[in-house]
Length: 276
Image (tube, rainbow, N blue to C red; front, side):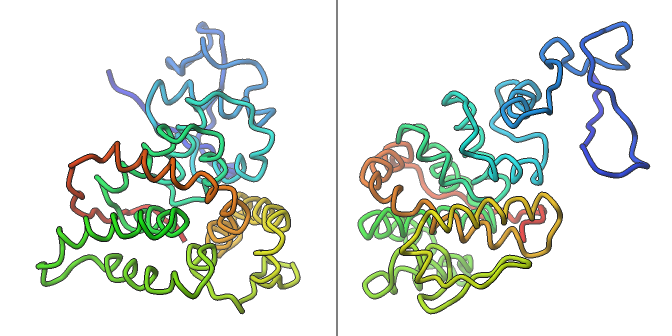
């Protein structure tokens, strides 16, 4: 059966579509039976709409800006494990977007699935989500991951760039705070959003609540199309939730290893998606 894909945009010249539950006025089978009235009025309704579109697939169909809009109001999301798992998988494996909050909402075995998927199906730049997470999970997990990658690429004349990047990240673990390494910054650095005062990394390490507030602002800026906001949002995620995640490090590490088992790391794919 043929189908047509539409994307929600703020372009007055774009092709208009109608969400309706009335099949007599629908121009196609846009799952009208599952779309509720006022579907886009609240964040949770947006997630409901994506679930209807996904039909069991681990994919966020409504696009990166809407994902960031949801993450800006993540504390208001009241969904089940299936939706949190979908959001985590999409943020990590498809969008290279902030997603640590979803991990904290999931049991370790479910949270592990997305990162095991990255290991088995590495894609640039998304594989950096696994590398950053590894730093938070600790040296034992980092050594396990590096050993797996080393076996695959140690004899390769041109291993992927992230292989060397991860080795460099690991070398800093004894002298640099894990959240700083994961955020790909330095202890003396400062972070600023458009129109905001600079906030030091030192302050963010001491006050995760400030990082969480700035993270929401950065996500809103992504939604509004501000250049550079995606990078800020990704980095602030580690200062906002890194400490909480480290409390569950042993369970998550064990779960990822169990999902991966003896499977070897996959070959690297390049993403054509815009992720800056």
